[in-house]
Length: 99
Image 1 (tube, rainbow, N blue to C red):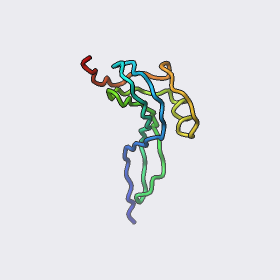
Image 2: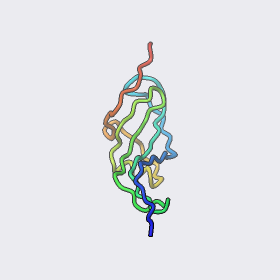
Image 3: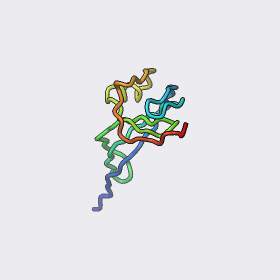
Image 4: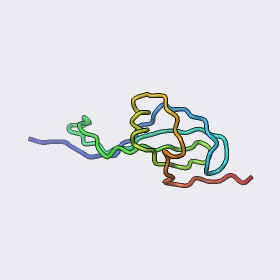
């Protein structure tokens, strides 16, 4: 008997639109929200997901922020919620425009 199983990392983009003035570069842009996770698959069928983390990426300079898990879960459920600066922790700095 053979078992085909694997562990992979996945990413799910959410349909979320919030226009902002970026705190990093000062330009006008919007937030793109996504979730990363680890997934166990048996016979190519995803069975178990764990290590879910939510992130926000600004479209103006591509700065990446870690999003508070409770806010990320609300966005994943489709709730219309505003992301505030206290919900974000900068993970990766983007580029700043030469102004």
